[in-house]
Length: 156
View 1 (cartoon, rainbow, N blue to C red):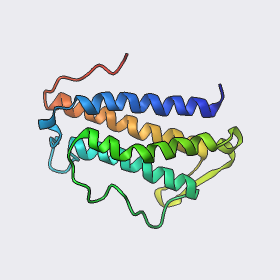
View 2 (tube, one colour):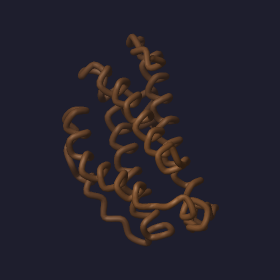
View 3 (cartoon, rainbow, N blue to C red):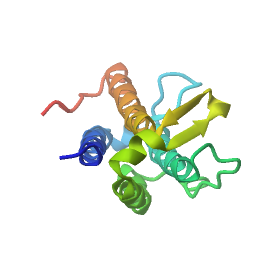
View 4 (tube, helix red, strand yellow):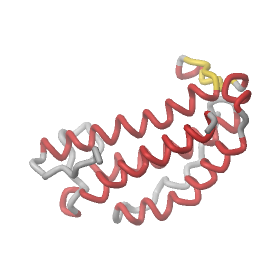
């Protein structure tokens, strides 16, 4: 097993656990937010899915995008399953892109996000993308605790 294989396993495992949390949110709680300035639950899910698409394009671009026309923008929020179905082809393209890289690419390709304060090796950047999703999944678990909604067990 090489580093690319491990990255794919990590992306799949992070998403599997995220989906467990996302689909456990009761429909009546999808609009819940802890305060007026926070994203609500379904907005947080969309943020994760949309950000992954942005990061994919930034990785292909080798840096931040000057313009990002998001396919997620202006879509109505309906359900977690609708969000996942819409994002699936973008996710599949992202995973295919990761599979196209070599071990050497992980260290040699630089992703220039100087506008956000960093330039990172591809391998580092890919781990950051998975970490971003993990952090937001943790936030949603906290949302559910705060809203007094039972939380699904993700540590299986």
